[in-house]
Image (tube, rainbow, N blue to C red; front, side, top):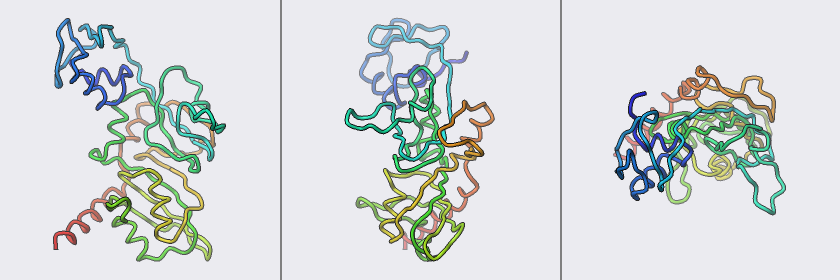
Length: 258
């Protein structure tokens, strides 16, 4: 096996996120073949002896990546607070070992959620620089005007800064509601709900349908399965709306430069 950066090996060995593993190395807690290493050091996980706090780590790693159709009312966490009786996503997935979600869904939202033990994959899917898309089918109150959807796409001020550019397409309208397809590259906590509320169109239902080009398909609520290599590739392939988001981002930049 070729050498890999040690922070990647630690992340795969379930020591946390890539950034957390970098902090472990920076604090001088990691040795490779008896020598304390610094950031950027590489090792062969099959040949080299890697210690964290003096204990040898397990470098035999099996990547697990599971898709779940999260029902409404289920918490995106491994364990609920003592005073919270709601079920957790981990209770739905009966797989041993530590799994963590890639991208959260609040309890009132539904749809596609990924659980994995692969910190490197989680970083690639979650970090905005990789431009991985997340797609939502959102029903909001009222009839959304074109001007409002364009404002949403360009970015709305929340918490003293503007939200990132996104794609907002109207799928269906009625007198009482509008169904939207929203594609995002990055988002803040409860961002869709907060933006919709601010624009005067509170969310009635929110379902994440895709991450990248991996969709829910016919997966029933509460069901799950382990992804194969092709599906993991689809997970990392952006939706076609990425081109629209890039154009919206360029338009916003041109306006800001004027």
